[in-house]
Image (tube, rainbow, N blue to C red; front, side, top):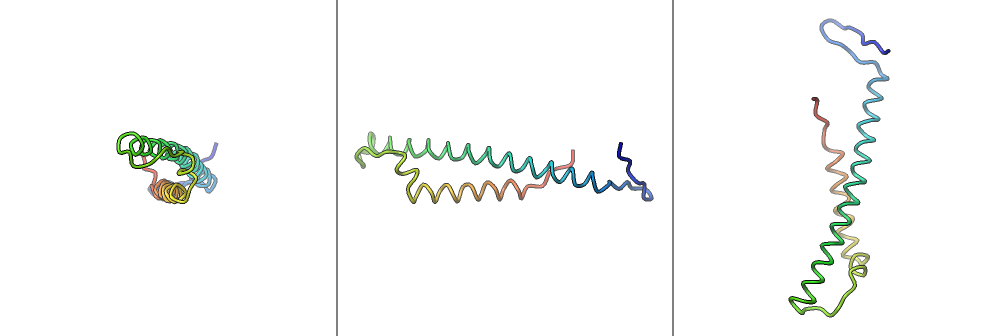
Length: 99
C-alpha cells in the first residue's frame, strides 16, 4: 500500500498516485469524447434527414435528395468538423471537481 508523506499539517501524494489519477482522468475524457462525438454525428444525420423530409414534402423546395450525399458533402463535413472540435475542446477544458 502506498503511504502518503506527512508534510506539516498537509499530506502529499506520491508521484505514482498523481500519475495514476492523470491517466484515469485523461482516459475517461478520451472515451467520453469519442462516445459524445459518435452521438453528435448520429444526431447530425437525423437532423439532415428531417430537413430533407421537410424540404421535399412540406416546403416542396427540393426534389428527392439522398441524405448521405449531404452528410458526406462539403456542408456535412464542415458541421462534423466544427462539432467534433467543439466537443473535444469542451470535454478536455472541463476540470474534474473534487467530491
